[in-house]
Image 1 (cartoon, rainbow, N blue to C red):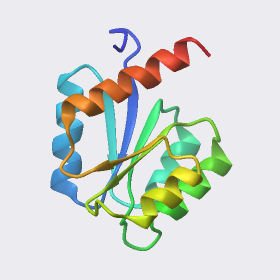
Image 2 (cartoon, helix red, strand yellow):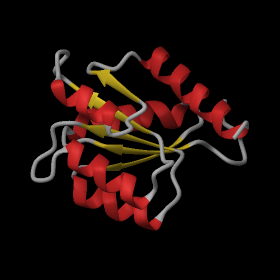
Image 3 (tube, rainbow, N blue to C red):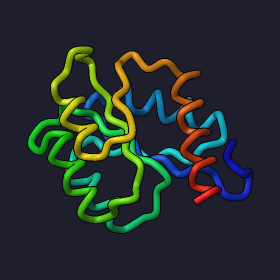
Length: 129
């Protein structure tokens, strides 16, 4: 999937620090570049300052929730793919997030194989854009 010289750059946004750091480590082991932040304000700052291929964004964040962060990311970079993460399988937030342009809504615990497949799909679309 990602080129060894130009790794797929991922921003993980989740207040569950152990989950976020573990998932980021698993992504790095697969050749992706994964940055982690634990709140929406930090996520928006990073999106303004750096290039990312994808943002993985928890719906339930303290302070500014994931849907508000998604809305603001759309203002900063409307083309940036965002995947929402949720622990609630029947979340209205997922539906609202998809209406706001989220690429997908993924349930926790994350199916790593399906997630990597989705990353490959996003990377392929970028190459053909």
